[in-house]
Image 1 (cartoon, rainbow, N blue to C red):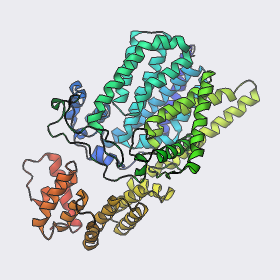
Image 2: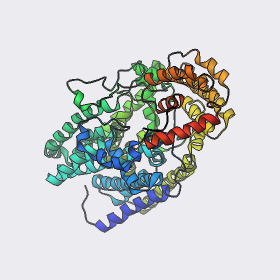
Image 3: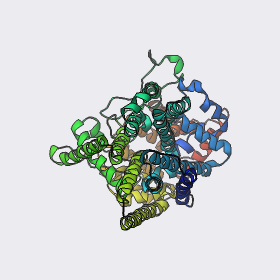
Length: 579
């Protein structure tokens, strides 16, 4: 239990954590927008206009569905708009991400200090969090600020909840409720905060603490219920073999007055993942996600071979599936037994499992393995590191010296891995080249590398990696369509057309068929492009290409539409697809 006896020392140590995070990430900003940033930052007109800040902050839009990207994460949209209004551009957004990570390190320090009462142990655990290379993805890719904000409010809410359970008060109670509310409006993973708070309070103050915290827990549960209602119409998506997580139209829970006039039901993901079998095969899901969980634990302890993209092997049968499942159950049982004995390591293990739950495909998720899903569990690992440090640095000067030396080497190793990964985030080509180098069997990484090469004018490399992606996942028509795109852009329209024959009704096939006719047979191209847009009305590229095909002038178009249309016309002409 924390006793505030040395506030200046604690502030100094917190400042050391903050500075370490800044020193790690400030010197190497990415030079270009990366991965999801292209869609949710560059392609998001809502967050590019400072005038929309008032709309983003309007509480009425917590009830009404705002038809913009990231509408299920309004805190993220508001923070991006604040960056835009400050005039910092993409660089300012990246700086905000770094500062958020640094502040999260400070919160981890005070959380560990609160739970273990040892400043050296809390410092070590917080530095593990600040320097851990698994954080790189959420810090360097602007869109993943959602995890940074979610963690910030999660940690603030957990600390407030603990202090409320010690001594109930209006300020701590209101702070906890507000923090939880903002956390779930940032990203989905903090929804587990009520369970994490119960574990922390029981560890810190026992059954009496739980009794004192009961009214606050009720507030948390009401927020969780509201969030489930809030999220459904804003972020649903279809995955093969699973029920949609969204809504299809107005209902008693979602009256038409709360939905946009042009509300559309959830779309299927454009690129079905290689592990799509998991959504319909429960045994394979259990065994595979057990192996993924164990790999997450390994990555937390020693983060080697981190990547921007993964393709976990599917485990379908009992024989190879039992060992990872047994390993997970053993670790969970050990955590529970240690927790019952009031051991900090037990709380840490349970916290890691709890923080991973939203990402373990219990409710279907598109990505079953991603570094960003480790950001919240990193707090549990920091707690585990603090517990280990405190236990190892017991009585005896030699033992203490050895513990400090080992801790220093471990932190240096984490920092070195983080620094070595820095150049990977320079631009999309470097990012996906590194992913393919680590695991050439990841089809999505191969396809994304092909796209990056195409932007650099390397048609041979783009087509080659597109063929590899299609070969790695032959049941996925989207990779064949991506290959067709690349062939078309590289002036090989005949080869592209051959690939389209097997996908006559696919929106991408319709679009590409129209695009290939744009130069020579505009009359046939327009109906194909219209059919593609009707099948996938959210696809901006389809909309802009149809404008070009219909030779519509700039009159009546928004400024961003005019700019994008002019840029697209140049690209099509350079590729020989437009006169």
